[in-house]
Image (cartoon, rainbow, N blue to C red):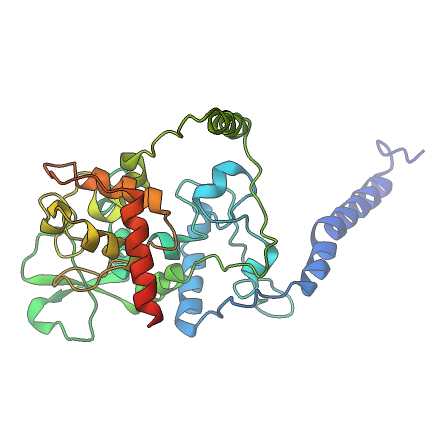
Length: 342
């Protein structure tokens, strides 16, 4: 018997042995196992600007509200095409020195959305800059704090071509003689966020998501319906628009002046021929003066999803244009692919 209630030395010794054992199991052994982890073949290294942005991300406690881990359960499918694996963190988890590991980026809470694939979901620099200056400029319901100290107010006459001016709406900054200019630290932070893109895995062995009970039941119902000859339910274009497009173009289709163009009343959205609109979604667009570039969504959305979103856009906010079909999107996608191959 150790007589722990009487012998303080035995109590301390047992506590130390327990601590050492748990530390070995939880920290030391996994650390040695991770020595064998290699980067994915196509995974790009972080540039110096992106690494400086990573340091800014850590210093401002962003991991307290944002995760960078796509779990292998079905509900996480919205954050990435596949579950995260150790190799995804190879370049961002380099040791600071012999004694210190870099801070964890996995996070444990999602007060804000997961950022694993945010470089694909939100590729536009201007969106991120507006979001950092005041998140309510692009997401009205956001609870994220603003970071105005990462920007400076500069007299309009003093702005140079090298300055990155942020087109903050008047309701958030109404000083006509001044411009909001991004500081290097926030430009680096945005560069880091834009670099967060899931790398394609080599070969056919891609980890799968574990379907929820609800998803499994829906899948069984859909399979039964297909066997009986019934058609699958149509995609919800309004929901897809909210998930994919509303952050820039806003739920009301009005966009943001100087940053993202409006869809309400747009000549392109109201054109009877949807070809140009489909091309823009597939390839992105960077030809509108006074607006930021739109990233391509051809690799992120299926023909059916694009058709549902465009049909919603062309029939909402006063727009009145014919619906778009998946077959039309497919034809334009094939045309774009042929043009790119030539």
